[in-house]
Length: 73
Figure (tube, rainbow, N blue to C red):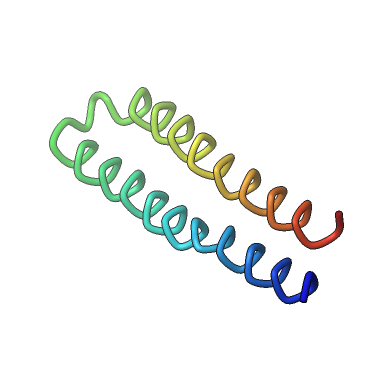
């Protein structure tokens, strides 16, 4: 019974990974749109996009951390 609850909890924690994928897509689509509107700012916008990517990806890493803690503790 406890093992089933752990699997359900870990699966529920991994739902956030779908949101991370969508978030990364939104970050880079905004980069492409912004760079096409103002090409002179493309280099600065790339820095902002990489910062947004890193912050979004950190959510995925924390989600996997929580899932593994649920499964193996």
